[in-house]
Image (cartoon, rainbow, N blue to C red; front, side, top):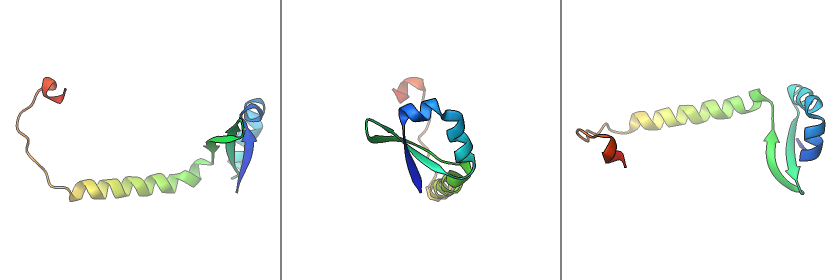
Length: 77
């Protein structure tokens, strides 16, 4: 479960916050009552990033290779 923490409190107690995150807890940083960021342990998001990367590579490999001929830098703009 993600615990809310204000941006001011997160700033004042950042070292303590990081120790808590290292233990596996997650936080939602709020500013003026609105969520603006998440602080989560790295391992928690590692699987999501790995899955997204795998899906992207699979999709790119399934696309056909197209020859567009010669081009120069100006053609890109």
